Image (cartoon, rainbow, N blue to C red; front, side, top):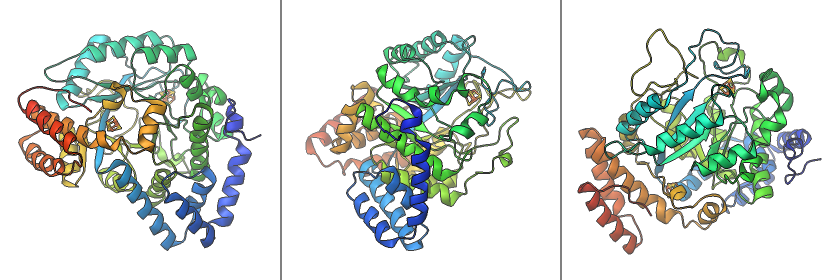
Length: 472
Ligand code: SF4
Ligand code: SF4
């Protein structure tokens, strides 16, 4: 029944295989010999399968857990260094015909403010995002074929890419919209999107159907097989994620890795990113109703085990998490975070009026992008606005093979420095700029290749002189 290569959701996320995995993990969670063996295998930096990783997640031996955290930190350092990529969400419309019980955009919610941005409003929002310094955004929209058809999404993508305000531009648009057809994924690919992101919410079919009682999203197989259709439509960078808190976390963890293994087995390329959202309060959503909420320690363990299991996959954490949690997770494996986010429809150009509420969830980190950038640098991270790979055609298996050979590291670090320099010149406050200039000087010396160092040195001077958009 379990078949990672199958195109059927119930075969590549086989419920029986997940249950067997959880049983195996529970039976072996204190099996020191096996845990050691798995940790040794993980040290090869080639990842772990869902069974092995599930044993590490279940393990409750304090000294072994310390080893797991330490290994996650090492892998994060080796693969991602001290760089953190920044992005912002842009909600286009909160019209939605689905009945998801954890999201305030569900159709039955009559008191949330329904909004859909027209192209002119999108233009204003994008200018505001550019004025903050963002180069990479994730567009989000509810599912509503009448209000938010694919043509609206495509027109919005065109609008966003077309806006060049002062030195600003959005260079990569990731798209988080409902599961759709191969034909529509082809259109998104042609529109030049970066990653197609779709959260599974929960992999547990029975729970999934209860949590999505109405609307097209009720169809578990159609939703779970969406990434296969995206791949068939030519999108080779896809982003997975579950909403932690809906189901038992060990189930979600094992199934999430099975999904990653399926993409690798069926298409030769695993997920580009994995997001780790947790349920948050919102308009008519009470988190206390969700009995599977995770505490911060378990959450940190999950992130560490994902880092070890799929070293080449970026891990994203949003402003659902507060500053302290984000700091902890950055050290354990997170490589991308959002900053200065608004989760309402619009809200960047002007704050949402007090009598309106179109937010999808309450933001837990309300700092400005400049504050986030300064904070990251003070922690020793390099905030990166890099979008080079997608623009250089380094996507899908090409991207993954560069990652696996670690060659990508020769690009990430210099690109981070050059895009940070642009940010400092165009958008930073004087205090942030001062911290950033010192950091760039220090990090510049760490570029190992003399030829690359020379290129970066020249480009930094050109950025000082007003030129923009350098990348390797
Ligand atoms: S999670 Fe998505 S599909 Fe579900 S109600 Fe919210 S916007 Fe609609
Ligand atoms: S070079 Fe590629 S992998 Fe590295 S930060 Fe830039 S876009 Fe990401």
